[in-house]
Length: 275
Image 1: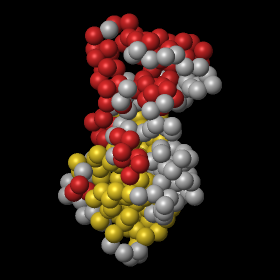
Image 2: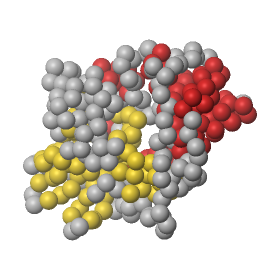
Image 3: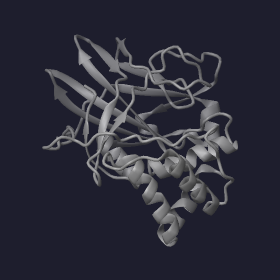
Image 4: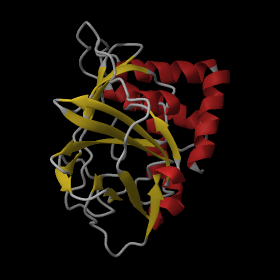
């Protein structure tokens, strides 16, 4: 089953099947509400009932271990998301993605950029939106289970990755730190890990914190791993790549919160930038 077909079926069942909607809501409450008790065995049982309604085989803890991802509630008052400059002055950004990843349906489809000033420096928060995130081997039961779990716990199949570009003394610092999102319904704080790729290759997941310096007018970002970890250095020189510029995809002015709310049915009210 292709990722987009799974998303459409999930959305249809969520609209029309009350039992399906209740199963999804119960898992989301355990995972996303910091005040709810999390039971991994119950979560897996409920998830397998969801899989059955999606026409998919059940999974086991050996392949998927549900876990609570939102542990604390945001402090009051809730900070506002960054206010984006309406007409940002952006550097030229080129994203190079392995062709094998694009052919699997994971191509870069949108870019959001939110530019603001912080600490006397111009900061551009960039969020890349990919069509999917395929855990190798692509098309396996493991990948389908992974997509279904993302629909339950993230409200989307599309993969979103955020990094920061900081203008400093004639150069750009490209910062792959993480950030935090604040859920609308529970006010829980969802931590987004760093997304640098380090020295990892395409078949390895990457979640490294890195700051890389670029001199010149063009910032080239390499998608180095299957989970779309990023770097200004290519760790897969042997893989053929496709090049994307902002004008090649659906570019929008907006922060990570806007990108999430445009692409997910789990909604957020604010974010705490990593910088």
